[in-house]
Every structure is written in structure tokens, then in C-alpha cells.
Length: 515
Image 1 (cartoon, rainbow, N blue to C red):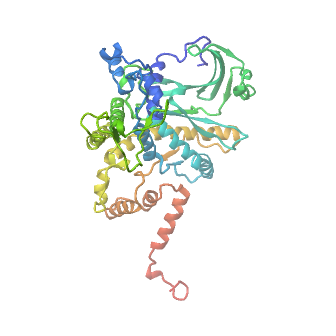
Image 2 (image 1 turned 60 degrees about the vertical axis):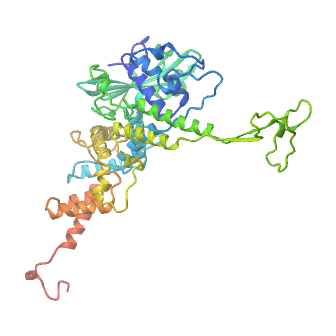
Image 3 (image 1 turned 45 degrees about the vertical axis):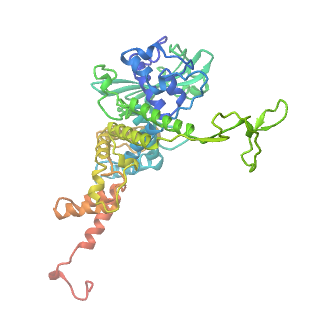
């Protein structure tokens, strides 16, 4: 398929529905209170109840959100946002990539495969790629998924680069639930009502580039790539169809869903393969947490100590300057019968109670509901104190929900990273002249067994498996050192075998062999 035709509606249906939901979740992720008020209809300042707040269905529910209520006239916005959504997204990424995975070719004795593995180490198993995966996973948790794509620039690096694109910057094409093409789009310039967009479509074997001049809702007409500085570089590289060959039969992009199924669109074929955000369905809980915290802060503001002083205690500051009270003064002289307080008191202090326990318990319960619905244990956030007397088994039992969620998400990342790593090797051979690997081989992606596992726990697991004769020396080394490549693992296995080898006494040669 080619790039979209001129005059197309943008974003195309039904992806406008998906982008609207991503925008809502992105507002929670970023924590922009102005955007939250805009999403839920709270931008008006009029001190009246909107008719939508009495409506039923989705419109009424959204309008009744804490962030959807109008600010009474004459009052300033004092609502507080708690970054719980951002904490959830960060924790999701930490569970997946705080300890990076290894991307390895299947073990083979061929020299060509050894060279390909060495090249794969330079391309994929680098701190830059691992940091990019950590970033992509955090955004995926908020948006419901993320895209990975292969790029290259011979002036920047001598190998292909792996980058990520947020879910609100791509239009995918599916076949049997598999990604067969994707169009990334970027706004490169705005001139009043005119919007310039750069479209980059990835297909097996090629990448198409197009520049369009349109409006906020219309893609507009295709223009030459050299009309904008941001796309001028591609004008010299594309062929007559606006494409750049990749040298691979594989797709040079991949989609990683955060988690499936996407319940909202299971009957919409174009949207059902999309992932589900960790925030999906718990937006009202986030809203309630913000409301509870704002109420708590309101109690604190109202409970500030205030002093009411009789008129006779004020000092006249002269004509037109009013009167004031000096709270550092030690001696006052008052006139009987001229005060303003009818009960005879001259100074009265007022301070309201702060309902901190009620607010705290409410917020803690709402937070637990949000975390459980998102698939995480409170212990993963440091909110569930662990006694030093607890065993490793008891500690892990508190992390079970988070570990199950991590295991599910890992499957999606493995399914995307393996074929994409193979495509990177193809592009590397085509663009940079590296040795071509076997096109039938798909690299293997290995994640650590547990996120941030303690060495003592790993050693105990290995010891139990060894006692049951259910693990080899090779697998022992791989479990304890998940970040090692195949060559390093093989070297360590040989050292262990050499150290544990007992010589046969019948073959011992006195004076020749060691003592």
C-alpha cells in the first residue's frame, strides 16, 4: 500500500476514537491539571451547575468527575493532583527493564553466527537501547502500547538505531491481528491554520516518506519533501515512489501492547489489536484520590489559627490608613464599653480540627483499589512495610500480583523484540555492509526470572533445582548471570567443569602429573 491520498481526514476513523482515549490517559500520566479540567469539561469558571451533570450515560458521568466540575466564581483553583498514574507507569517500566534483557542468537558453532552475535551485541545489547526500552515501557503503560522502529543515519552511528514512537503518533494496519504496516506521523510546522505533516510508512522491504500540507482535521495535499527543512534529508534518498529500501523482508517496525485484551474495542477490528492502558477503567479512582487529597488540603487551609481582636485593641494608623494590631505588644490600655465584641472578650483564637485520619484512610483504600485494578501489589510501591523477620517466601508472596503482571507484559515484548532484532541485522547488512545472518533465525529475548531479584534468592532457587537434579551447569550460570552473552556463559561453564573434575587415580603418573 502507498501513503494516504490527498484530502484524507486526519486522523482517519476509527483511530480518532483511540487517540481521544490516549489523550485522556496522557493527561493523567503528565499530571497537567489544565488538561484534566479540559478533558472532563471543567474549563468553565461559572458558578452554576451544568445541565450535563444531571445527564445519564457517559456524558453525565464525565461531567460529574471532580476535575469536570466548574470552579465557583470568585474562587481560585486549589485542586491538587496526586501523581499516582505516573507512579504506576514508572513502576511498570521498572519491573520490566530495571534489569535489561539479553537478545541472543540461537547457539551455533558457525563462525558467521558468532560474528552476527557480536554485531548484535553492538547494536541491541547497549545501555542506550536498554534506556530507550525503559522509556518506551513507561509510556506504553500509560498509552496502552508503544511502537518500536528501526532508523539509521551514517553520520550519527555505524549501525542501525532502535527508537520508539508513542501510540498517539502512529496509524497501524493489521492482518489477522498481526502488524503488517504502520504510518508514523509528525507535525513539522504550523503556519496559522495550515499544518505540515511528515508521514513515514513502514512496510516489509521499504519505508515511504511523504510531506502533506493541510489543516488540523484534513491531511491536505502531498508536497515535495524538500519544501520543509525537517524532511529535506529524505528528498535525496527516496526513489520515484517516495520509498527507501531496507534490505529486509521483515517489517522495520513493531507494536508492543501494554496488555490485552482492549475491552472497549473488542468488536472493532481496527482497534481490537491495540493494548490496554494500566489506567483503563480506573480513571474515576484517580479522580477520587485527587478529590480526597484536595479536601485534606482544604481542611489544612481552613484550620489555620486565626485571632479575632476587639476594636479597642487596634492601633489607629492615622486618617486614611486604617487600624492594625501588633501581636508583639505586651501591654494594652482599653476603654470600657467601646469594644466590638459583645461577650466582653477582647482577643479570641479560632482553629478548626484537621480530619487527617479519615482522609488518610480514604486515600490509602482508594490507592489500593487503583493498584489492584492496574495489576500491581502495594509492596511494589514501597507502601506495604515488610518486617525484617519475614522470610523471602513471605516477601515474594506480597509481590505476586506485580510479578504476574510483569510475566504477562514480558510475552508481548518478546514477541516484538525478537523479529525486530532480526530486521536490524538485515538492515545492518544492507546499509552498513555487515555479515548477513541466516534470514530464518530469529534472535531470542531473555528477561531475568524476577525483577530486581536478590542474589541470595537466586542462589537458593538454583540450589533447590540442583538438589532435584533438574538443572544443568549451563542453565545455572545463565540464571545467576542473565546479562551475560553466550560466549561468556560458555567460558564460565568450562571453568566450573575444570575445577570440579576429579582425576582418575588409575591414570595418575607419578613425577609427571601434579601432586
